Length: 356
Image 1 (cartoon, rainbow, N blue to C red):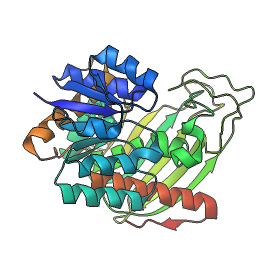
Image 2: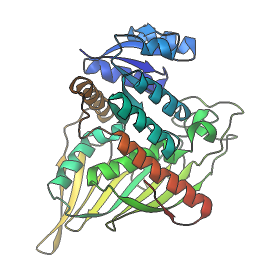
Image 3: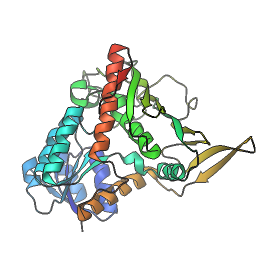
Image 4: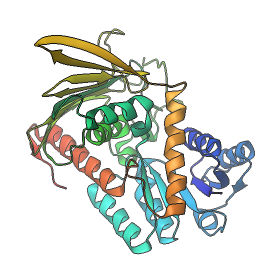
């Protein structure tokens, strides 16, 4: 039996708790700086409500810790948890800077604890299928990936920490872009990004903005100083490229540009919706184009992905070894290096070398 504690008691913490319970993990304790939020979480998931992070980390029935808090708290809490010799599942992004990522890695190595990154999109059934097909040579050598995620009205908690650069580190790129960057490199096994050029923009304003979906409620008179849309191209050492088109909100009419991932190779191409139930592949047979679809057995891709993430975390706690498909600290730091390069490119309006 695996037992974990959760630092943070907001929406994503509840998602983690439900997924962990589904795979047989016990939620032993929770901490949140807002007592009412923590108490509600504790009642819902039948767990101890700690009065401090130290109290949670001192418990013998907490083998691992899920860190589900605003981005600016990731590094300090991950380091504190690792130093307490707790295994850690750290929500994305890994941290605010590459330097913070390296500090976390240093604590992991010194403690000998397991560190898994919350790159849950790796475990979407369609993504798992796409990776398997690429490994089997379905598209040949990958030379270009296009990853698109455009929400129509989905700025999370406008005015709260998500849209406050001092707390979040950025907008849609560091929030949802991290998933697409990691996913693209994971399924294609591209591992050596060398340059990036990108552009970020801020289109919407709090006054008059009406949302369709949000992670949290808007904060009146709050801060909104991050991008709500961006695009970028990342170049890899072997000449392959990754193109990103991401927005929290857009004026684009619905169904004009499909969200998903397109992977072009020298022997074929594929496309899949991250939370869909199929992977479509295009190839040439005797010079003529042919398309076929690989179906995926899935009921609730979102829920299944989080359950898979927690199943692998539980296995890692017991085996003392991170599963090869789980996001590592090195993966998190690599993604952060790309994010930093894209933001720097936007600031300088120049292509930027990626240092990692």
